[in-house]
Amino acid sequence: MTKSRLAFIGAGVIGLSCAWRAASAGLRVTVVDPAPASGASWVAGGMLAPVTEAWPGEEALLELGVESVRRWPGFAEELGVAAGQSAGLRTEGTVVVATGSGDRAELDTLADYLARLGRAVERLSGRELRRLEPALGPDVRGGLSVPGDLAVDNRMLLAALRTAAERAGATFVESAARAVLDDGTRVTGVRTDGADLESDVVIVCAGAHSGSLHPVLTGLVRPVKGEILRLAHRAGAFPPPSRTVRALVDGRPVYVVPRDGGGLVVGATQAETGFDTEVTVGGVRDLLRDAERVLPGIAEYALVESAAGLRPGSPDNLPLVGALGPEGLLVATGHHRNGMLLAPVTADAVLQLLHGRPVPDAMRPADPARVTAAAPSAGRGHRYPEEVARARVDQR
Image 1 (cartoon, rainbow, N blue to C red):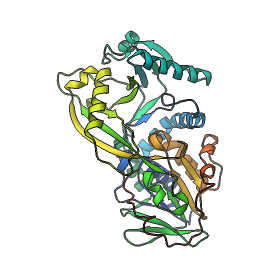
Image 2: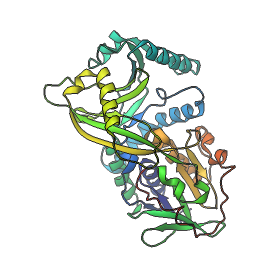
Image 3: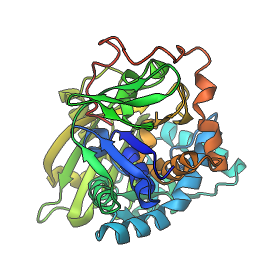
Image 4: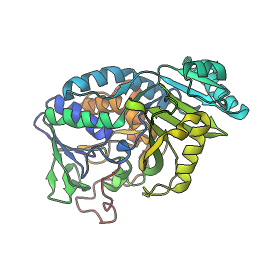
């Protein structure tokens, strides 16, 4: 494998993490992306929250998330050394709060479900929550404390990953990938807006745009739009929370994630509107309304950014990580809301696959074979219709 030419399509958090791990292992790595460290990874909230995002029916995703968050401290420490800069990990934990009786009942259902799985969380009254986080307002009636759910500054992480990958020997080609090329049996390279790039192994990490890059991926990954806001603390305003705050406000979810220097990320809406990345007035209004119900002091903060990204959704919310289609094609995509969370375990799994070894046990349910029975076959040669490969790889 050390002599093989590896091409990673996509330089979001998944592509960069996988490329860094592969380059650090001595493999020949090229990363193809017109704008590395952009797209959905650039606008992400950065929650590493497998427990507070758990729900009945998604036990495999919970186990995968728990395994990945367990790896996060070591991943962040190793990355910080490799990059010579912080990976942005925050370890203060998470509180999940509710504003009304219906919201509290939903959190009770979540707590009961997690208890049955052996995932303990602490139930707290509104008063107890305000002792933990004085910024919480009087509308908060109760909730949960989850110290094991972490957070990361996504932009610090992306900067560290690119630096570490380059230091490890990865080469970046800042061009849009149009298609994975193959000869009917195995991959031969990547078609870009520039010249075709010859490769022995291609790893598709292109997020919501992965489905346009090869026929075997058609229909397996869809864009799920999410809008977020960034706020900045102003002099005289109430101090921000120290922990991530997730909330249910009249049944609507909202989260607020702290950043160094008093910044806050507020998110996130969710809509399936194709590849639309425009921020809507309604999205901004709803996020600010619900966040202010939980943290009244943010009314005095500055609104410094609004943005939208496209999460890559899979048919069952589990990512797609494994071999697919012609020989030499691997995919690491479909992480939906969990790209930041699942970066360490995904990168480790891809490295194992590149060496012909089994993936971590928790990653086995993410094998793309589970959803590809009805997918178009590979083996169509290297010429694909323009409509299959028209989307730019600029969101992930």
